[in-house]
Image (cartoon, rainbow, N blue to C red):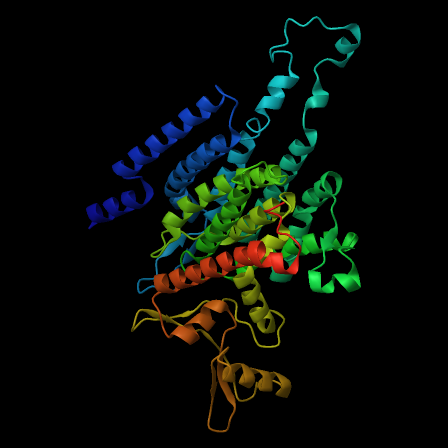
Length: 470
């Protein structure tokens, strides 16, 4: 028995030979690509891809190596939706976040490579005899795009502060209402840079309303309130849509892939598009993010070997906020977050205490069938919902947005919990955990693609032009 146990322990924490070789090969290829970018003009996009590959390898192996260390430190949780309730390392999103931060910090020289070369006297103008007034200035630093560097660094800063919050939450389990506004503080550097650098606060009015409101409507300070709310909403919404293996990571990967796809639409226009720079910027942050997320998904997909923790949810949500605010497409992000927005709105009765809210609302595992069923909130005969709430619950049951069980006297026995996962199980019947995760992810893809279609095609009906055709 001991031999078998020993072997099992090794297989979970060490990389198999095939995995080690694959990861080594991937890392070597990425390092070669990185070294090569310095030969030519330093193509930052290719460098970013290569760093994404390195980030994947690093995250993959560190999750394996550090799993037992996290367990010993008490960062562990039980996988409820399984026959054998095993303890798994929790908070693995912290590893992903740290590797990601290192990747984006290492990347800093790449997009500015040309500017650095041009700004230093080593850039081919060594033989130029300098006039006296130039000598005073030292290097031609005025050529350097400080604005871009500032926005890049503000993004790194926002992501670092949100990762700290996430790790703090995983360690000390901060109460929901206390951590709700913290992402807004993390987004202050972004909003300041937006204010200094871009500062557009007016929104284009849809054509039917233009006679009344004019073509542009300036929101002024409200626009910053709106962006801060996106910053609060995005990390929290990913944190609420959780509870089964792999769902937090897959929804984040889908949103990141759709944003990447949206960025590529701008890069592949036949002539340079005015928004190219901000979409390149967004890609530099999304590619390494996809790298660390895929490595995490490998271990978090059903049957999960690790849990991602709140750190990952906050950090993923903040990556989307960073790229959408600094890339100037925060409205597109909202279209991609429709399932999260629906889940949040649907959760409101429980989040704000109209209906009792249990600590965890994840679907209930039926040990006999091995399938997930909607989890429920029980009502006792003494504790019944107030009449208006009761009426609303019955209405939701009629339109199949809730499952309500009543006893003979018409008293509430139980109502299903208000999350999109439970609602999906009410609609589809009991499902296996991975099946549920795949269907929700599929729904996210379809809704997201529809959102992008609305953004680029139907926008033409409401507005004079879609900015892809600018």
